[in-house]
Length: 386
Image (cartoon, rainbow, N blue to C red; front, side, top):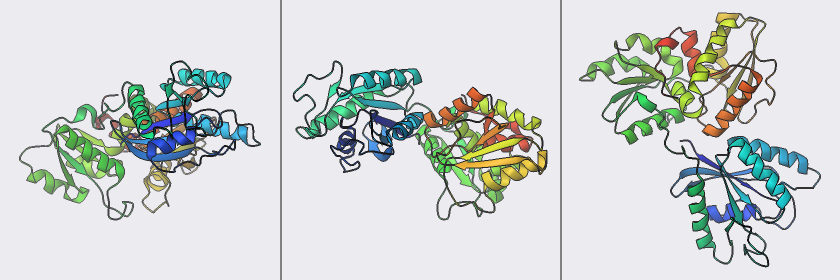
């Protein structure tokens, strides 16, 4: 699921944390009259009526003048990379508010302006509400204010939010889709990985018919079907094993490839895969994964892809790894970036990394596209519409 990320911005003591607490109905963020109370961005996941799953991001005051104020503002700027929209609390520091209003506009982040004061609890007490701002009271009338905030968020959503499909144009209502899901040592015990779960839900929402199996049972599964499936989806690491069993004329893709289109820039990733042909033992590659986990013997990003690359290029190939939100601002020195599917990121954050790569002229591709290229079947892999 592509969680909506809503960032809350404002001056110190403008009521940002109170807005978070009001929306969640919990004491999520610390509220205090002391400037600089919120340091690192605080993220809270919740279900927002009308928008589904979302993440609220509380931030430090953008006029923080404490000893670490500059560093805190830098963290807020980094958090903008993942913001789908912003709530800007206004009325406390007009000059800074104007600066951040322009910053959001330049980044194309939709913004709603909110007038709220955590200490007094009365948005318009003692002064006039800034023009166009939505008045919010966190104490006097919290229920009405919560409803008003949610309605404001829904009105401010990006135009394309919620309309993208994970399987895109590759599956439609009534289609039988076979999902081939390896259950090896790298698979989580007792559950399916997130992209597999999301793909099943996407197919069910479309009215398609998902049929799940493992690579070892693919031939038996296909034989049990009355007719050939409309699509086969597998883990990228199983391409070589699955592709020979795919019936003629049936499209084949992978969960990672679907994620590349859903969260990133699929055409750019496919074009960037060609850079693999130019790698030499002196080249340097960055492999980035969204989640943090202990690497295993069959780990796709830390074991399998590096082995495939070095088999093609040479053992001297330099490969660096980053995980989670660790990602270099400066990609100078890298010849290629290979990113995971990004199931733990929202689309805005994934695209911010694509933008950094493009700005530095460094090609970026993803796990599924990379494996398809290295196994020689990229031209045969079905890509969803961009």
